[in-house]
Image (tube, rainbow, N blue to C red; front, side, top):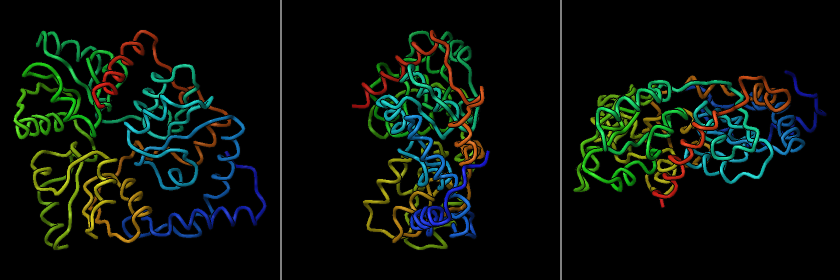
Length: 347
């Protein structure tokens, strides 16, 4: 879908606005965003921002999506927890969620009266796709009476089968608050190991019973990646996500959520950071902390990158069936209890 052609001066002004935000941002490991890139994006950002107002829509963009979405059209940018809150609070008539399916599904659960659209359609997630609600029920049957906690990177039916949902920012605190000395955690098996290690460190050990999969980005990092960063950049601060393997996390200076990593970098007096995370977050930090250097070994989520300016404009103008989010009413009601329990315990 092609946007309506704007006057050349308006397009140039928009391109210059974008370039002012993205000039320091990596497009690939070897290239930065150029003015030409911004000129190509400008007609789309102008059209999206215009139709967004007409349709009384709000655009939520996860930090792992592309910089032209995050800085060109998003009303709010952040991680799963931040955007879930924005979705719950939104008064807009239409919520456009540039992310993956489970995120848009969560938005619909929290604000069911709104039309929720996802530009990428049913974009998956290796974690969310690794477990079903029936599998959670079977796991719970094997461990009767053990509370069940799910990572937000899960389907609505998995959330519906659990007692509480968590994010990477609140997982350790909520796990500590759960009753008993055993806890079921799905579907991130590497995060489960990190939970067990962290609770032991805090002096409140629990046996973590887990099943599921791992993140296709964060599970690729190895201790050697941390070691190589330290050899090449003496004094570097290495940050990682708790979806990484415990043996990697133990070697890092900071382990936390997307929001946590942003806050850590912003408050640090250090100037060079090794980023064991998805490229989109590196892009955000490059844009927001231009006086600091970010070294990114690798790691890109192909699911998140399915969102684009083109399909965002198309979804706003004429959404296809697969871009319109709906959740079964019974599942939504049960899943909402799990999500709201998270908000309650995260305080």
